[in-house]
Length: 303
Image (cartoon, rainbow, N blue to C red; front, side, top):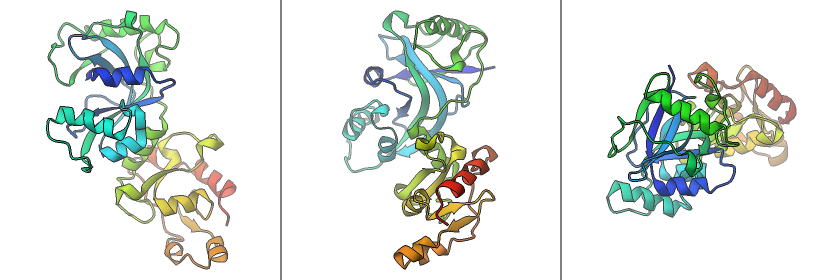
């Protein structure tokens, strides 16, 4: 069984994102600050406009659900939040929260991370199933292998016949199958942050604003936006890692370069980490790839 969730979508959010070229990911936020549990990664999340438009108008592949401070959601996704600025994002969320907005409060919002979004041309918009109430607030999940979900699936396949409407394997002709999505940069950052339980993998620092998701093999060097190509570091440790003053061996031991002492006559703060085991995610799938670590040892680390 594979599912799709039809989520009630802010019309302005949809219109802004539809107008953006080459959007690889979006943040489908909710003002409630709650986790979304209706889908597994790789299943479909579909966008349905508010009544009276009341059409399924696009969607994408569900990757992750989390709760983030609004500032981090903006830093990670920018306009892919469906807002033109952080101020605009606050105004949109405050409208739904129905409470006076504090421009300095870094409140929590629910974030549903959608990859490879698609936006249907208006002549391909799809009516939602008859059993979906017009006044539904959030949305509803459907099994795509049986009615009424099957009809939605078949209409999506027809829409797929139009070039560049739906590009991912999850929505090709035939039976629906789960395909883990390619991550965008923002989603990579958030998934790595959550995989490491929002703690620096070396220092255990938990202050979220100073934590950064580092690529082991940079994207510019053909590294991928995959969690196993990422490590969560405190900002200064991230900088040292990127510049080769620090690395992690394939057996997950931290090594700190002698170059820090030679070049800066300093480094006591960092040499205390030398030989320490990296703190890794609980899921083996999210743990750093030995191949990526070996690449960093050989190509970036300064010894």
